[in-house]
Length: 345
Image 1 (tube, helix red, strand yellow):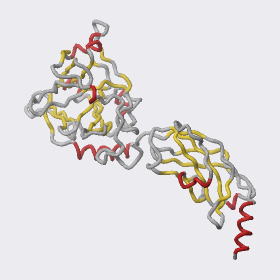
Image 2 (tube, helix red, strand yellow):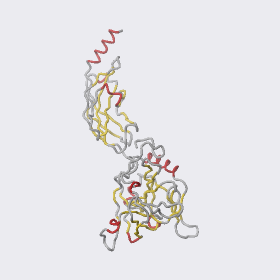
Image 3 (tube, one colour):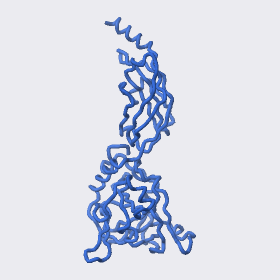
Image 4 (cartoon, helix red, strand yellow):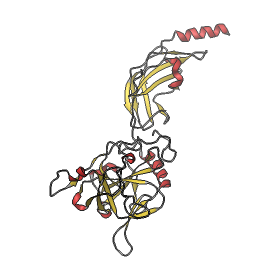
């Protein structure tokens, strides 16, 4: 028995395993991808396993590893290609990776004979899909709480923002690209253009809070000018920043606008008059529209079109500028069980 095992080990050691060539990555999602490659050689039928070395591109360590370190990498039994690599515990959305492949033949003693490494290729994982955003939406709905009435959207900035030179006849606040705050897989970060507004009110006064993390001056505009029958409403994100506060990003896009076209098919659409976060309903007597916001979360509302300052008022707030509460480029807490789903954070 021992002699047969030694002979088998020697045969495996003498194999010339093919090196993977022309690696092809396809069907990329936020936490999976398909991979295939070409491999030609006399001992192709002896391959029992594939070793896949996958690293985030920003990792400065060598992309290659010795096969004795395989338990820290991806080891797959040899299957018909293409094969699917899936796993939210090691794949993150919107992340660039480097990848190399090795073929291997397992020996009776548990060790491996391996080929040389393939060339190193790069690819980038995708944003959250509509399915993932739907899962995030369900979690957000469970957190929203009761609804409170409000009447204005508001935006805080420094004094210079509101008093910078503008055309006297068209004092527009212009949309800008959303930063990287929130979920790493959000399809709107770094892509959607808009203007951030708030609408949360204080429970005891029914008015906007006097403190703000974004600046001591506030622009207020009547809610019906941004949210009405000509506005589509979308769910954008749900996150927290290592605190008990949870944030929900909503998008207000005028029907048919550039922002509206971007959101269609990417973000879950919400019924303006019937959702858990932000509603606009008509009065039974035909009076003015009524507006309500969720009490238990902080709403960040992105309006996708320019807004003329002449539509509202600018005035200083009486409270403090609490910069520590700013969400600018804030990173989501990946350990929070309330606002994370089982895909890359």
